Image (cartoon, rainbow, N blue to C red; front, side):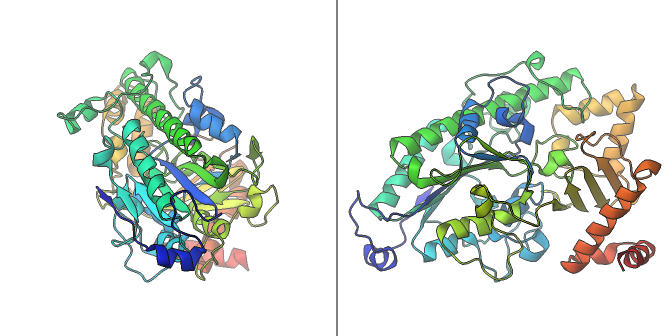
Length: 480
């Protein structure tokens, strides 16, 4: 654990026109960014969770701000997803395509905020949320000192310390507060006990039983899967407990009216057909923004697609910092104020490699109604493997596949895929039926395929060169 104040009062006075008294601070917007770990978008009550009252604190935040129904992260795995937040660039342009830092000389968020006098802190997920090895956080506490990122009381203490240091320096603050819930190992699971046998992990305020929880359509309803989902939803509850504490600290400090609060998840739940893929349940995220005096309370944006790459320019605009050239994302500050913004009718998402450094390149375009995925890795031989296959669920699916042909089809498809996938997301949001060859959808398939092809070509995506030449020639002719 490290606490560090990096700027002198003299420098602060020059930058912010403020003195150094403990109760005086610049009249500037603070930022509190709460990022969940592997939280599915529809596990939150305000986004349609079927479990009653599972996330009352997150729901209250949504009631006080704006929630986005078409928000996506850029890539559905931790470090690349967070790298897009910190740089505003697609992973192939930032260099953060996997579990490593960028070595490119590109602008990143924390130095830009520090340049105008912000006090910048991070709680947990430090390695994954720092785009460079030397990201200059002023205040840094990692998961080991936060009950493995799961102890709300430790977060309370460290957040109070962070605010005290920010006030002492008379600086506005940017705090990225990361929960390690509901990432595996789930609450009360065998994995949790095996991973930390000597550590007491704080339980949630409510633990769920298998009978309490829904089984998403993209998974079979098996007893072992229900058990693991109960453990996952117990972890979601513990996340919400933490959010309640965090907002309470902000209120008690008298800073709620002067702070933009954002809440989102870095990717979908760590189950097959969600995390580390390009499905709707992989990248869709429960994005909430509360900004008193600017964002209308209890507002819903059901029109604009926003993406992880848009976080960086949005924070910069709200802080009054010019957005650097080369940024791929676009600020949605105007959308927060109820205005319409063009160019937000689709989202482009990607995948590169797992935490085990296995490469499974994918590209995807999603619109209001459809999703098209190109799997560059799917050659009939390579077998997909990811962290979501640890624990109970995948083992249960493999056992059931020997007896149930429908489960066998799902496990076989998950392991091998096909080069192209196409889904009618309005009718099939859980991506159960690949319609790539369905005769009724060939016009829509051609439109989406061409849109992704043109986007990759225009944006210099290196995966563009891997498109089959015969398909490239057809697409090039169709786009003329």
